[in-house]
Length: 80
Image (tube, rainbow, N blue to C red; front, side, top):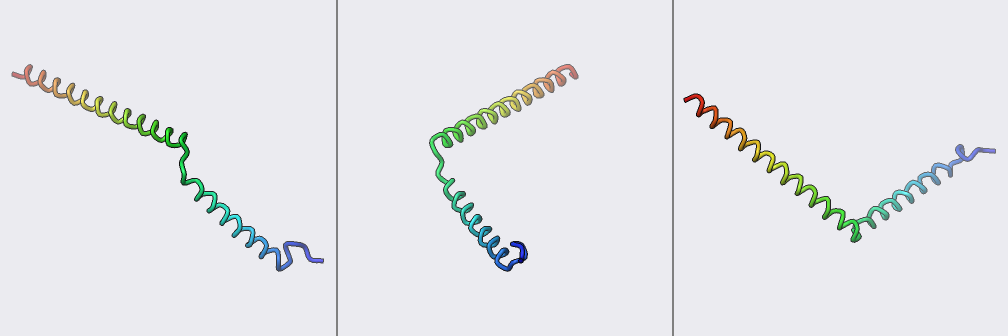
């Protein structure tokens, strides 16, 4: 008696199962397009936090530039 892995129908069954799971996976991924209210709120929070971080970085850069400019002015005043 042949084992299941030696029969000709085993590869066909495996191939059919693989195709079935692939189509099921694509269907599940397509269903994920609609964001719920919690997902949308989370995205808004993420964007707000990112914008706040960018604003803090910009303020820190501006403060650093102002300190460098002040240091240059002090250096120029002491060189004269």
